[in-house]
Image (cartoon, rainbow, N blue to C red; front, side, top):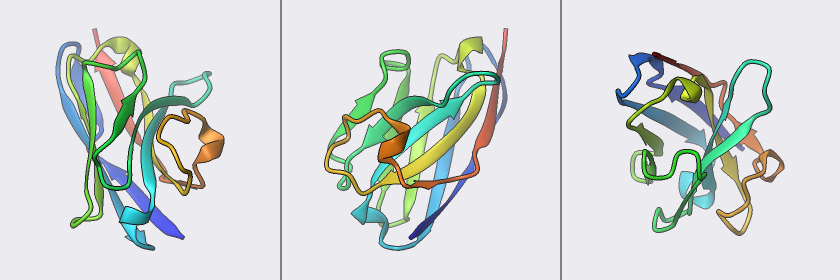
Length: 125
């Protein structure tokens, strides 16, 4: 089992940037495909991005492609999400998650077994 703790959220103006981090502990971090999801009030949890075990492959949702970038540092057991050109619609609680699946192209919450508690991102207009 892996434990996940997110950080880096906050309040930012539209057009600004934030970098989220997710620190992992427990089982070997590089054993897992990692992903970011977000959940706005009253909405379902939404896939944002995923990254392969080595970090060599990434997959981003259409809504964030070109603005957000997922990355990982297996030596530091840490996952990142660089968020640029933020919009008010990006306001949500952002969660990192770990999957034992075989592909990063499964934007489904059910593919991820382990979840962090989330970090709030608020984008003001």
